Amino acid sequence: MLSSPVLDVGIGLALMYLLLALVCSVVQEVIANLTSWRGRHLLESIKTMLNDPTLSGLAKRVYADPRINNLSLPGKLPSYIPAAAFANALVDIAKDENALTASSFDGPLAPFLRDAQGDAEKLRAALEEWFDNAMDRFGGWYKRNVQLVILGIAAVVTVGLNANTIEVARQIWAQPALRAAISAEASRFSAAQQHGSGGTPSTAPNIDVDALMSEIDRTLPIGWTSAEIGRLIAGLNGGQTTSETGAHRAWEWAARVVGWVVTVLALSLGAQFWFDTLGTAIGIRAAGPKPAKKTEPS
Image (cartoon, rainbow, N blue to C red; front, side, top):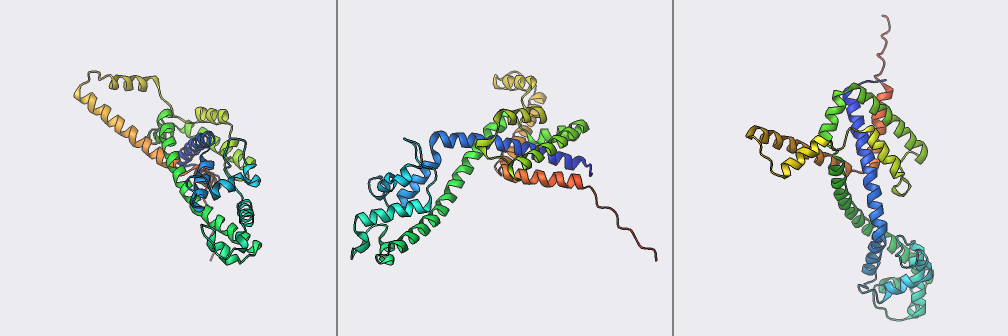
């Protein structure tokens, strides 16, 4: 087994980033579910596709189709629509309007109707392909929006838990017992995740939040101490300080902010990235140095 303080610090930081990234995922999923974020984004995407910004034309009829309306609970928007359901709904609308046999076409379906030339199956296949391609584009926009939200959540979680990368690295480096404990806990946690989820971290709805927070509290040297809170309150109240103390406090807070920023940027990479990184680091530690090659006698 390879024992290296630098590697142990890296494992400790990767474990911290993984656990906190999972917390951010849980919060993001809760927000998305409470606000029907995915469903609203999908609705806006389909309204754009069908040129129905007021939801009074094609998009409204598509969402009224039972194959789509039944995908969600009453009063909720579906967060996912199969391409086949979307295409079938539009084909049925085209049939109802006798658009398949019309000599002239108008609206967003016009190019598909012209190409199909009255063939419903050809129209259905073209509409499915159109939907899949459009969802790839809109999905990219959704992921970018999610990334921005995750960044905001990461900032709140980082400051709320005082997850200062610089300070955590310093503590792990300075305490061999802490390094050993965190490395052992990281190996256990990584193995449990791989065994329970097929090699990927659990998706947010399946995470045991209480167990996750207990893991963070038990393992990681993060959080606010009473002394830090006292200094923070004193600083906010404008307590009298000497110039030397004031300069020291400014440097202390500058280092803290830098540590927070590093943590926030790391969390924005996502739980999967840190799960893979942690597994790689643990694998290197377990493998140890390569044995020296034996030289054959001449």
